[in-house]
Image (cartoon, rainbow, N blue to C red; front, side, top):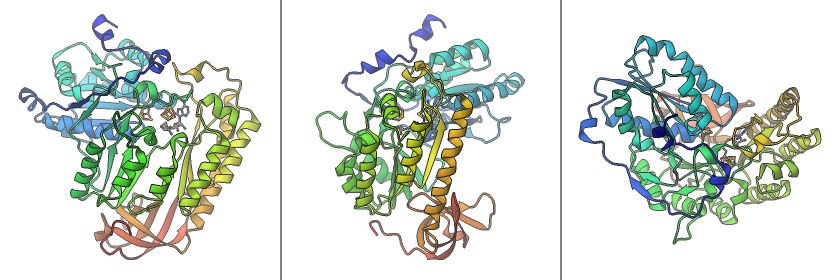
Length: 490
Ligand code: SAH
Ligand code: SF4
Ligand code: F3S
């Protein structure tokens, strides 16, 4: 790596990252695209391939917004693309493997069409080892930028178009918020809205605090204005995004406004459904539960990653809660919202995890009865503390634990769904089912997928559906009637 690149780039560094102070967060406004860049993409097509979480999906919408201001048009076809960007995820090794696979797969296309610009952005770009590997082994990549400098894309793309060298700009500087970024939302019904960026939790296995930087909240007025605007445009649902949404507001200086306050203000906006992801059990306070219990447009679904049911594992994960505190929180939530749907994330095979410790996770799963769970085998991430922990659990044992965990969850999911038999649920109808165009498909307030026969004009609207055939992952039902004009708060 040359000196020019080093200026922008430092490797993930736990010590440095943990020294994050209370430095002020600057709120910058996205500059309008300079006139000379507005025509750069005229007659050209772009394709963004997105990996990873909703944060990345939404970042891709911002990238699309910027590219379209530069005159580019979107395409689904690789062969007709003039620009292909891969928005990457670093959360587990297999996520990274997929990206390297894509980069390799696209090489012949780039060789055949040298004017094609091939770029990489997202969380993997924030890792020094990844950038080095691309520089050494994948010289056909033209552009690398990170998660903190998406707003610089017009300038970087210009550079990439003019230069024969790979353009690499990754900022280790973190802590700014850029407002007014253009966005091309991929869905006309449901929208993602960032409420905060970054993460300061430093769970010992996790790369996100390094790839996404320090926790910083957008100003409440900016978030609320964006949601009001989406409501005006006819969106039916928003999902508020953050790695740890209930830390929202902690970093706002000079005001005491937290996630519970934000949700209380969301209730007053005329948008039928408001979701959020992801909440951390540690920061889930009573005020937030109280506000969520008011319902209205605040749906009764909470994604609450527990990671493990064993106190020693939770401790070495640095999750900062115990099994008992998690169960107490679940009791409180269920008391306030009896029909709440809880979903979770779980990691099996943490370094040194014993059979007994794993069984604590199984028993917690049984006790809570999550409606569904994302389950993962622990994957060591370079630069994180867990990567240095001694791990004597064979991969076969980890796989077998994952299998047992999934079997148990399937049983619980099925039982939960069966309890909906005969019940009438409100479905936001999203479109035709992927498998059968005669079947419509949509989601309940609790985010369960429902398939049913019904007239096409229901697409984009709310329908009442009686559940007739509950399955493990989906529900089949019959259409009752179109919901009358949906009332917020009903
Ligand atoms: N901010 C969210 C999670 C983001 S990552 C939260 O704290 O809940 C999504 C999930 O990926 C995590 O909840 C965790 O279960 C899993 N995960 C993160 N790092 C991992 C790793 N190194 N190996 C395996 N799973 C991991
Ligand atoms: Fe990663 Fe979530 Fe922990 Fe943050 S809170 S370090 S994003 S698992
Ligand atoms: Fe992956 Fe980055 Fe999201 S690592 S899970 S894309 S924050």
